[in-house]
Each structure stands twice: as structure tokens, then as C-alpha cells.
Length: 203
Image 1 (spheres, helix red, strand yellow):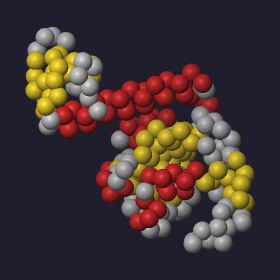
Image 2: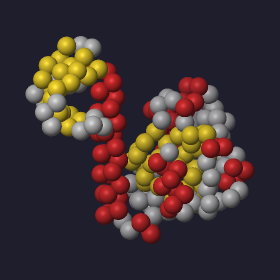
Image 3: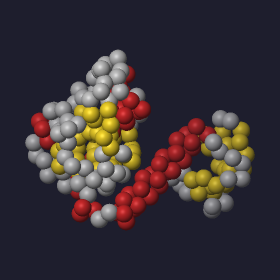
Image 4: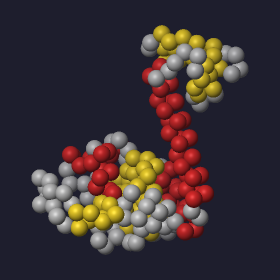
């Protein structure tokens, strides 16, 4: 990941890589200090910085593209039936499918997803276009053929390990005092205010 002569950053500040000697590397900070750093640890720190920067960029783009007062904010509850459905790819496909009873969705609307069985919040996404009508493909779990709607989503964040996601009991939502009971019903779209949404999304 790192290249000699290139600049990166950690929580201390920006630095230039002078030499790579795995598992460590020699770097020089902007103030002139030279240090030996663990490559694996610095990779994680640098990736977190890149992810944070990208999330901030997307947030700014959403604000510029659509007034915040026009975006609707939801916590959506879903059922994840088995361990095979918990991979990021399988989850994204499931979460993009909108049931017939869903609210009318528009670009800019945002979701925080909640898994009923595990009682955790695990993903944040933004709607980027109107729902698309299609037919469900046949799989080992269903015969297919019925009409479904797929909503295009921009993924702000999604946990890679649902067991390490945000537990229901660690959260309070002022705009929905009874949210813990309401979210136990599958495909609930619980409308929340901006403050509650942003606090939960940051978690």
C-alpha cells in the first residue's frame, strides 16, 4: 500500500515515507521528526482517514444536491434469515429491494438499517434515484417471477461484521420514544428527525 517518497497521514499529522522495511517503515513528519512505524497499523489508520474524508465529501455533495429539509430520514428494519445472507454483497442486494408497502422514496432520502434478529444497526445509505420495477429471479429460496422494486443506493457505511454492529439497547432516539418496540416488525420504515439520524449514523 505504502510507497517510498509518497505522503500519507496519521493522527499526529502528515508524513513522507523514507524507507520500507516490513513490518516497519521509516517516515519523516512535517516538523522534521523521523520515526519508525508499524506498517500494518499505519495502513488501518490511513484507510480510516481516507474513509472519513470520502464520507465527508459525500455528505457535502448531498447537501449541495438537495436541501436537507427535503430529505426524509428512516430507520428500516429487516430480517436476515441465515448466515449466508450476512455477507456485504448479499446484504446490499437485499437492502436495495423495496417491498410494496414502503414509503414513496426519492433521491436524497436516507436509511439506517436495523437487523431484527441480531438487534443491531449496521448500515447507512442514501437513495440516488427512483425505484426501478423488475421481476425477482428464481433462486433456491423462491420461485421468482413476482414484481419487485430496486432502489439505487449510495452506501455511506456498512459494517463488515454484524456481531460488532451498534446494539439496539445502546441507542436512544428522542424523536421516536417507542422505537425499540416499533423496529421489531419487519420492513418498518421509522421516520426520525435529523439530529437522531446523524447521531446514529455517526455511531
